[in-house]
Length: 365
Image (cartoon, rainbow, N blue to C red):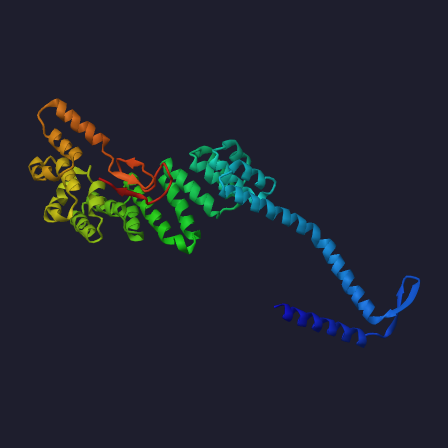
């Protein structure tokens, strides 16, 4: 490598000497009232030097500024990696480009005042994650006014509207999210859209919402909404047929749990439940029988039921008031749905109110 560098240096010197030899002619120069003579190669080299000097003087202050920013960024990230959040935040101060890092640092320290003092959209998201809903909503709305298609703000407002029960607004926002989402998350956003539409059907009873939800994405919730829509519109055969189809997609246990409080519909589905009972989770099957008061069908399952559900079943059909009260308490305390964050729910919900993640709630019995 050194030999190659030496050869390259000799080659450059040779080129320079050739240039000097070919441009050694003396030329007259004039500057205002001053005249003189100088070799041509000197003038060329002097012009190159002056050009380099001007460029150096112009770009050097910027380079110093960028170098300082990069050093602060490097120092701040190193401090973040070491868990020194307050020191990291100090490294990020004074530069709007690094506010996102400062937001994360303030979020880890749960410093609400600091988050409110920063303007980065990330801060609005961090406020939402810390469950400061109103402050977060105001921030997101201001961002949307300035940048209508800001994906971060659209998702944040969608989540807030869902938490507040404004499902129609949440659906409208999700339409915009789906339109602007990146390719890698489009399927996930379609699933969110479908479950929002299904949730909207449950509150509005508009059959179109259930149909659209099922067409967009098939989940236990969209299956349940479509079955309910068929049943409510008098299309019982279609409801039964669709419930049977849920077995093919492996959603039957979740669908049964979602429909558990719909006694009239459960009665109509009982033929399929009986025919496919071997495919249904034992606990789900027992809960469906209990809901319809079919203790004779629960009895054969008692030996394989866990203690909690066996106690619930026996207490439900006891003649003693104390036992029936115990059954009511057990039923009220039953939270069969669990998010990956550990939060449990009595009813299925598309988004966890604790961790604000979508489609992470599963049936855990």
